[in-house]
Structures are given as C-alpha cells and as structure tokens.
Length: 393
Figure 1 (tube, one colour):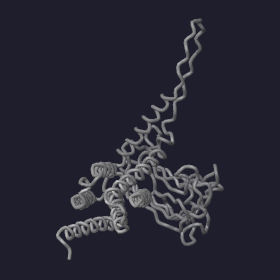
Figure 2: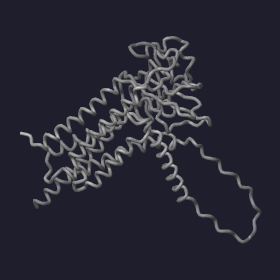
Figure 3: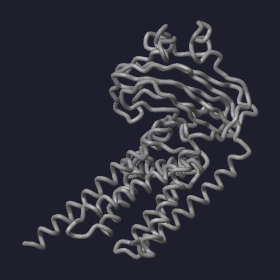
Figure 4: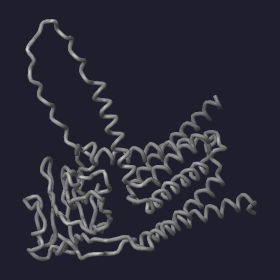
C-alpha cells in the first residue's frame, strides 16, 4: 500500500513523463513555420539536366548520377579523400522580406571515415554572409551530420534570417577522410513563424517549468549531502538551455577571443634591451591582420564548447547525484533509479530546447550527456564498492 509521500511522488513523476512525452510528440507533428514564398530550388530531385544550373561545385568528386538518388532516382554522389572533398553549393542573394528558411533533403552515406576535426564528416550546412562578406558561422547552421554509415534518411531544419544578412548559402559537403554521400530531394523554402507558435511555446514552457519545480520539491536536492553543488550545477545547465542560441554562441565566441588574446600576451617575446649606440631606424611593416573568420571563432570552437559543456556539466551532475543518493554498500536498485532519473532529466532538457529562439533538440547532445553521466555513476559505484571492501578489512 502506497503512503502519502509515495503517491505524491508517483503523480509528480507521471506528470513529468506526460509533459516531456507530449512536448516531444507535439513538436514532431506540429510545424511552427508556414511557407511565404515558392520553392527556391527548381528541381531538388535532380530529374532534369537543367537542375544542375543553380548549383556550383560540380567536378569528379561531385557528380550527378542517374541512379544515385532515393529509390534509384537521379541524385548527387559526393566522394572524398584527404585534401579532396566533394562540395555542392547553392546561394540565395535576395533576402528581402524573408523571415526564415526551411531546408530539407534526403541523404545516405556509406564507408564513412571521420577526418581530424569533429566536423570532418558528410554533412550539410546553411549559413549567412553579412554585408562585410563575413560568414555568420556563430549562428545555428547545421542541417545534418552523418557520423557513421546510414541508409536514406530525411533531414529538416529552420534558419531565421539575421538582420545583417546579405546572402544565404547551402553547402552539402563530404568532408570525411573517406566514404560516399548521396543526396536527393533538396528543398529550400522561405517561411515565417505561425501566429500560434508563441502561444504553444508559452503553454509548454509553463507546463515544463511546473513539472520541473514539482520534481525538485519531491527530490529536495538542496537537502542532500552535496545539495548546494547539485543545485548550482542544475542552475548552470538550465541557464545554458533557456538562453537564446545567438546570445549563447556570441558569448562563447567572445570568451574564446579573450582566452586567445590572453594566451598570445602570455607567450609574447620580451622586448629587446635597448642599445646605447644609435642605429638608423628601419621602416616597420605593419603586421598582417588576422582574418576575422578564423575556424576557431567561426564554428568549430563554438561546437566544441557546446560538446564540452554538455559532457562536463552532466557528468558533474551525475557524479554529485550518485554520491548523494547511492549508499555504501552500493545498491543496484538505487544505481538504476539514479541513472534513469538523470537520463530522463537530460531528455527533458533536450525537449525544452524546442522553445528558446535559435535552439533545437538533438539526439547527438543527448548521447553525449548519457555517456558522461553513465561514466560518472559507474565511477561512484566503484568508489562505494571500494569503501565497502575497506570497511570490511
């Protein structure tokens, strides 16, 4: 027979599960954007020879193949090797009165071998250039990444147009060290947000907040042994989730620049000792300016920081939670309960990212969270087991 506390916790858990499940289902069925213009790619299925005219990048590594598309239809095949990558490009020059773009395509990859960098895989990106011809990689720009062999899948994403954008570009790239990527049914459509979208965001955001608050009330992490640290880690995670994507990425870029500048000042050579003997002054050549669009500041650095932030924060949360809730000797039942709760929280935070501007839920982020949390909980399990053996001795 359940007591009052058990019944309360059961209903709070059921509400949290229902909230996260309904949000995930709703945002997979409901599209918050509607078309405001015609399709910009005349023949994204590559069924006619004229379809190739709007693209650039055709060569021996980027070819139109009669049976290279979905279900044996015409499609594009992109091959790669170290230093020689297949890249297909499409550019949109007139962005007047276009709030956002919907980009979709089908893709398949086989024989994938990742390159040195994390983004050296078969992928597609959609990004903007500002009026100074600078690529705005700090904004959300990934349509899809294929990190391992995969059969035909459908990919779709949305990209709001920033105020200072001069043009937009879709790059389909096979940047791996080896492998083949096939592309078909590419679509780029101007869209705007539905009038109902903000109301649905408000509704689900409120429901999620209520469920999360009730779960905190039931668990009372601040009352545990490491409660203050757990609460602080939760606050950091929630702050990173609810911030708009552009603000978060801009903050990361600024931080990387500050660290880079401090590091350069630290390793700068000492100024030479002045010699009393006068020497004729030599003309000083100005140092060449560094390009503003360095990879570390454009996209790769931001993506790495996102990955590292996910891994570190969720690993820390799992480690502190396991220390607080797993006894010595460790209970397998308690280990499973702690792991399940942490994985559910990580999934809930991904679902919440349907709401903030410029954010999107991603299974890749959830995988990183799970890997970090599982490792942290196992470390505590080993620690508790060792403590038990020590006490026996």
